[in-house]
Image (cartoon, rainbow, N blue to C red):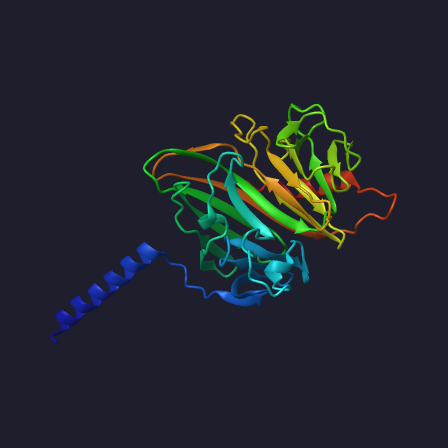
Length: 337
């Protein structure tokens, strides 16, 4: 082959390679690290020297484990663990680190999103993307991006709601994380108070705005859930942008998330945060809620939660959590949005 033809061929190959880098990005491909977890095989996993995160694309695109030094902060049911050996209805109520869309009372049934099979793609050494099936009932597809810091416990969890329909839709981000044990939930009370007791209780299909509950108290600017409430589901409208869960295992689980006082929140009570704690005391659901998002056909809306884990001793009987120290810890973390 003449030298000028060889040069042209090399130039063409170089152009094609450059085009591929432009289209697909210059980051190197990363293989998925996979582990077995409970009844699930080959679950994608990311981690660093102290923290491990295990995902479940098999059912609902959720997190099965978010652990610090081997201690899982999430509640995993016996059905997900496969401990009962039964396959009947085990998908009906998936456990652990769930995400969803709302508003709860209006959003259509969406089994493809909440219980369906998702796809997983590694996007970096400690990052992962999960993508749902298309949901005809809601008109959306969900994409979840997760990224763990090289050191420490910071895990960024972003959910994108993509409108794949030919009409505008309105939904909100709804996190439904089942934490390990009831523990103590701590909600900083910031922003204008719309509720006389700073929370509402969901009861018998309605909402009680002046509830009385021995398991709930207000102390030094915090609402504390110190025991399973009279009825499981509560709602709060704090705009502080974070919530903490002190676990009996000695872990402190913190979620940070953006709040938007000037936007419309379309849950029934207009809340920014909800909890659900059954009488069994085995878990509490920690549920940051995003504002209503009007999404045009082909458009997207996103919401990011930032998770942290710290070692923190559960208070002895008669003692209480040092709330000033907790506030200081959050100040040191700073806002993450």
